[in-house]
Image (cartoon, rainbow, N blue to C red):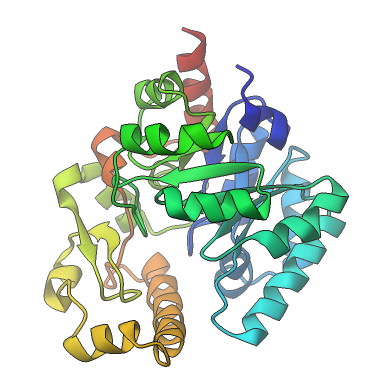
Length: 321
C-alpha cells in the first residue's frame, strides 16, 4: 500500500517503530526496518542505555539491515550543551545515510534547514493543532499525531478528533497511540492517516532488550492498567499501574508544580526531571524491582511476545485483505 509516508521514508509498509527511551535497542530498530516498516533510532537510548558511540551504533544497525532507518531528535532547548550534542548527532546521521527524521518538543525549523539540503524529510510529533501549525510554519514534511491512547507523553485528544483537526493542514498525518492489532492499524488508514507509529507493541518482541518482566506485564495488562504519572517528567506520562507506581504515587508535589510553571525555573525543572527520568527508566529496563514501565492503551490488543518482523508482516497483510 502506497501512502505519503511510504514514499517519504522509502518503505513498503506505512508503519513506524517509534523512538523509545530506553527500549530502542539496535536489534529492534533493524528488525522493524528489515521487515518493511521503519525503525527510529533514539540517540540517548543508543548511547547512554545501550552503550554505543553514536556513529558506531548506526553502523552496527547497518550490519543487521540495509533498509531505511530514521532518527528521533528531541529539540526542546533544555540546555546549550544538549542542543550542540543533538546537532552533532543529526550531522552524523546524515553522514551515515539517514534521511528520515522525527522531531519532538519544540520548533523544528533548524532541523528542517539542516536535513533538507541532503534530501532529508522531517515528521513532527504533535498533540494538537497549535503545535502542528508550528511544524507547518517550520516546513516539516509530515505530522505524527499523538493521541490520548499513546504511551509516554500522551495527548489529550482521540484518534478521530486529531485527523479531523490536522487533516486540513495539508500534510500527511501518522497515527500514534492505541494501535496494538492489525485491525486497529487498518482502521487508522481508513480514517485518513498516512500510517501508524507503534511503541508499546514493539516492546513485547523477541528483539527488544527490555526485561522479561516488563514484556510479561504488557502482555497481561488491559487498558485500565495504564495510568498517568507526573513523577517521571513533571507532566502526565502513561505507565503501567504496578505496585512500584502505587507506592510512589501519581502526582508531582506542590513545589515541583509551582517551579514547572515559573518563567525562570521551568527550564531547570525540566532538565532535572529529564535527568531523573533517564536514570529511572534505564534502571527499569533490566531491574525487575523498578517497575517504572511506560505503556499505552494498546496493551489491550497485545497477547504475546513475538518477533518484530512477524508483527510487521501481520499488519501489512491487514492492508491487503
